[in-house]
Length: 85
Image (cartoon, rainbow, N blue to C red; front, side):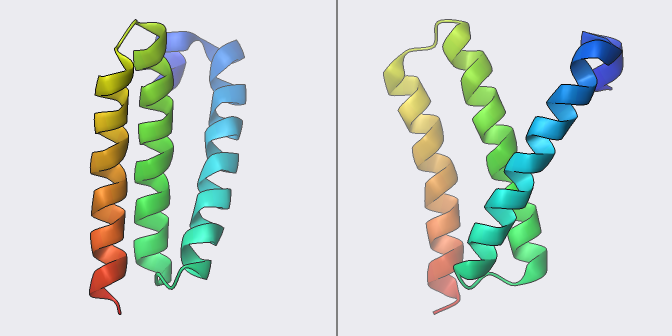
């Protein structure tokens, strides 16, 4: 649970920021021909990847490793979009 890890003062703004990301991503994915369920799932996944990248970057992960994470996430999305054509 986020609150137990970071405290209530940090959890609320974090939830809000992640929710905002999720909404923007979902809307963009729906505009990109994904159905509601797939758009919602990918939006949650991509928001999580984005947050993970921020933490990994702050922890000193190399740019090469960060790019690899992005490539995997975007590759899965591209495959899903390609399957819908």
